[in-house]
Amino acid sequence: MKKSILALAVVAALATPLAVQADTILYGSARVSVDYNDEDPADGYWDVVNNDSRIGVQGSEDLGGGLSAVYQYEFGVDLTEGSNFEGNRPKFVGLKGGFGTVTLGTQETPYYHVVGITDIFNTAKSFGETAWLGGSFNGFLRPTESSGRFSGSMTREANSLYYLTPDLSGFSAEAMLVMDGGRNDSTGTDTGYSDGIDLWNIALKYSNGPFFAGASYIKLEGTDDVSLVFSDGSSLPITLDLDQWAVGLGYQSGPFSIGLIYEQGDLNTWGPFEPAFKLLPGSSTDTPWNVYLTGSYSFGNNTIRAAYGQLDTGVDLLDYDSKIDNYLVGYQYNFSKRTSVWVEYIGRSADTLFFSDANAVSIGTRVDF
Image (tube, rainbow, N blue to C red; front, side, top):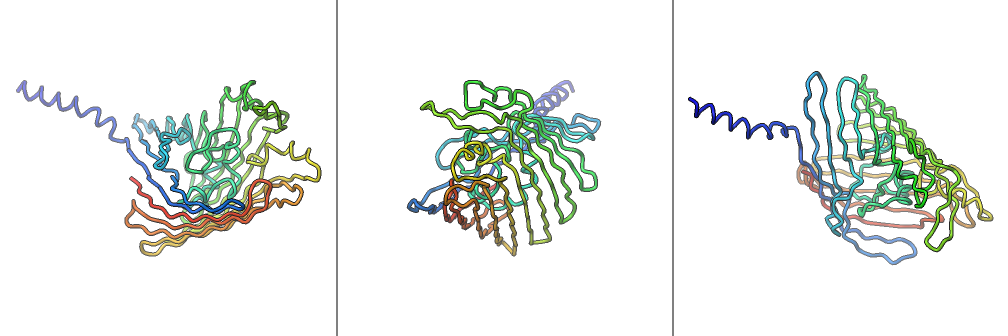
């Protein structure tokens, strides 16, 4: 009898760690393609490209009384060049209950949860700096991911406090505060960021059945009088007092879906340089804006996608244009719910200060687990 009790105690002790981890999920996505890139005036070239591959764990623990602890720890994984465990992906811990969800860490922004309704393609080239007004601003002052998608203010933010309300008949609200006092380094390129609340972001959303509607506003609380100093001692006047807003609409019914966003503001590639542009003779600046429309249709194991967008940089300089037109089409074949292959075309028509005409074809495979 005593041996039986001892055996049961040993089994219970060994099973306890497994029970604690029962709600932890290991997940990932491997996405690699062969791309042909042709950007005027350079010659075309082939490249094997990583497209936001990642690995992570997420889960929760029931604390009783309707309260749960939630967590996620995700890394970007580069399957092509070896720069693995990229940092700017969701990593957070927090609490969830009747009050909503509060988390701390590196997290997706409320802004992205609105405009992301149109982020439907496999290739990382489809939702970059010339297709929407997000992300690329932080590519200017922070490292970028090797996949080609910028890890900027519009997508994810480190040092962030995030709050999500409970769902109220389809309505919800989100808020984010970014507090990174180290960004206001008086000796580095981050000079000019506030030393309090660096960035704040709010969003209101409605999601019910096939319909989605959302609006978001994001604000960087920096100074409007700062210079970017280069290694040779030269400097460029910039501003870090920037903001932006967006609205998004979506509809999905059976195999058909459509998404539309409109953005306007200066928290992007072009906004910080407005003081410098104003110093150039014959130049004029206006508030950048962007409209982006996507659609998809699935039949059997097949999915087709298409998108069109026009982005206005707000910068008129000499003979350069301020507008960028984007054209995208894609086909995906699903071998299963986890494994698929794709062929996608990304076209850009532009004659701006930063970007010219470009075409790319991406042929890739994706395995989720």
